[in-house]
Image 1 (cartoon, helix red, strand yellow):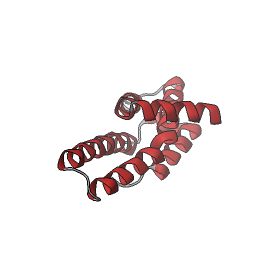
Image 2 (cartoon, one colour):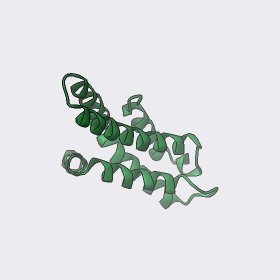
Image 3 (spheres, rainbow, N blue to C red):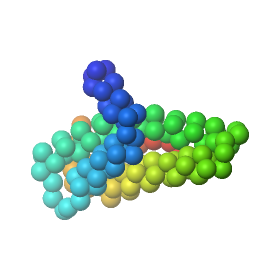
Image 4 (tube, rainbow, N blue to C red):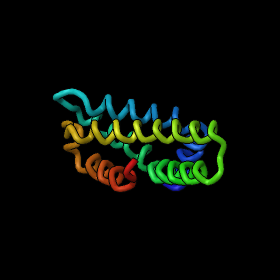
Length: 125
């Protein structure tokens, strides 16, 4: 599990917006529809695991870059950090909104457990 988490964090660190966009799209896809197969539930669990691994890092990155941007950064850098933070916030909000619809794919206890872990790790944007 540690090796996988380290690999996922490395992917996130390399391209955070692409990583979050991919995971968010997966969560949204697996949370749509009135019916859900067992496989859809497992796919949602995997996407939530990938998000959960980086959720704290993403939230911390938002906090540290917003603090550093207010401490003596140039106006251009502040705007860039704010845009990045807003983007991360939007991805995390889209995921929680999809989960809030209580899709049938959450009926699996393992998937529900991953959803709870993800929600616990996401800080308020």
